[in-house]
Length: 230
Length: 287
Image 1 (cartoon, helix red, strand yellow):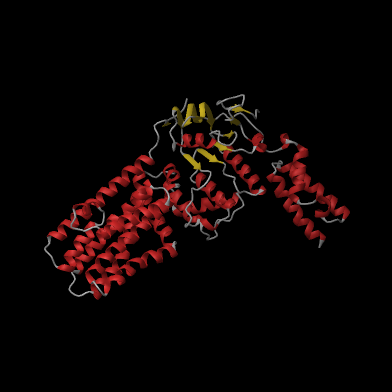
Image 2 (cartoon, one colour):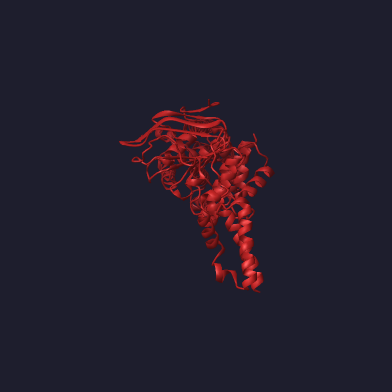
């Protein structure tokens, strides 16, 4: 547990010191929100949810990329693979949860007749999906630029594809749009249920993928045998 | 005025002689001789002898390697690392062919060879980070690995690196920090400064890298050209440190392309394809 906590702590410290990047990323959801606030308040809520998810994804991508070269030596220093990726995920989820608070409050205060509880759930689910998504991209796309462009594609598609289309469900943040519809348009609870299931499914699926890739990449190769040598 | 200058110069000379590997009693004798000469002549040391580093190097050269403290000996400790028949290809290019290497506790093995001959590849295979196409590596003990580049977090402080690696080794925070700072001190670096790793100079960053690899006293040290960016003094300190670790019973493999310190290692593995000994560790410094 100490090892996992130490990884989480150092991930948090490393992220909080990227101040310039953090400020830009954390104001992005606000920009999304303000851009649609006057003409379509429902879209403003959907966009702030996507903004928070995108910000957390990018932070996760940076954290994953920064760790890529160091993880092999940490494995040799006594860490297990799961301690590395779970510690990193724990830090990212924590940071995302903290980031969600002001935006949830903003929507609750600024919007009339919005189901604030549902907005909070959508926000947290977005964070839960975004962290492993960013880590996964950092694992398969070693350079930050490539990962950031991949995230832009994901978030761009999420914004332009009709959420009722079947293909939209294959996108990671479909849940936030579904729950936002429930929160803003006061539709039936089926939207909420589908959204929560979709979000949880993606969170678990992406986390499993991160676990598999990390374990494979950081595995001890079979040619190496630890034993007393005669 | 001259006396104060000379005293400072003599103190610096003592340090440089140690760095050059001159035995302590011999170094003391040299310093005493120089001090006597300066006192008698009343001259400024720097005018007569030049810089302490240059004079120490000249003294060490004139004494020859056999007078240094680095007396090679045949290691007798248990085998910590055994590489057996390791081969590796990248595409059509074969970089390692049937390589064997045995390193015992209390032994320094140097892997040398031209650029691209597979030195770093072999070290990564020894660390279990990279798979060979064939062959096996047996280890008996924990590994500390110092990569050639990277290996640190840009936005963490040196102490935080020590805590991170130390936790993996089962060390407490205080223990990791104090041990890290102590080892940094041996390399002439005050690691207490609160400077992010990205703001450290290249050489200091490599010192951090090196200290991280040896934290927790792993029995096997795999060092991939860890001295890059070191100034001359630190480079000599690094070899002193290596020697101390060796005398403490650690098995050390160091990748190097600088051949001027091979008299300080016990085994040399030359991976140059045209080398007369291919693949098998060749002992250069016999007792």
